[in-house]
Image 1 (cartoon, rainbow, N blue to C red):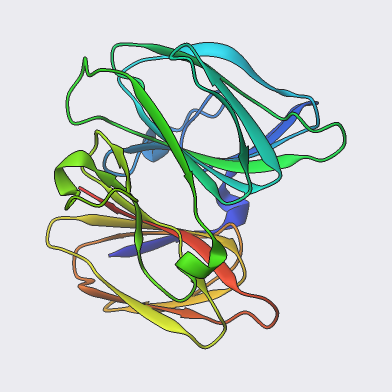
Image 2 (cartoon, one colour):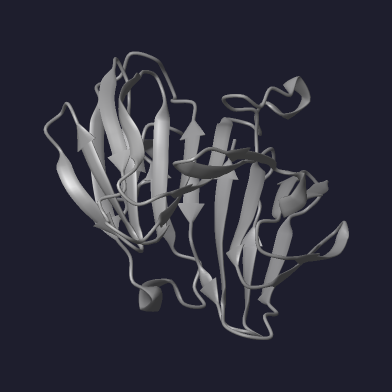
Length: 244
């Protein structure tokens, strides 16, 4: 079964310092029928104004992945990590028993757009941790290569970022006319979100056209997912997550 959620169906949160699009219930958006997709609890598309951001605040028992789409994001946490994350950087944070962090825009004049996803951990009470890594467009062009994986799924690759959740996350870029195929495993879910460009996705349920901000939630009866770039201008960048 595949369910396409269009960009317009997301919940918009507009404040003086931040514009957000929520794909699931979050903050002032409360919809019990749209609370999660498997262990994916939140997917927020944020744009921070210059010199604005989230002041230091706590989390626990969450696995948080952030991806900087454009601009620069500054991260600060009580583990001693203080760093600026440029466009193309992914950061992973295991909140575990507790962590305080801030995410701010250090620029004087440019906004920063970043995507954040929250996942349930494999178990509560884990040791907090943080890590980041930048991925070039060339590394991701027309390829379906893992970016983040659960520690139990890592085959020893030092380049992969790890979290304490049974997921694998990809951020491919597809040129127009290029196609990749994702094999969905039995009893697993697939979440696909289109950041920029246009995509055509094809599976047992039919063929669907996606525009920027659209998402597809897929489970059962879709063993092979064919994903094709269809942009008239530029490339298609998207996030794909394999979820239990």
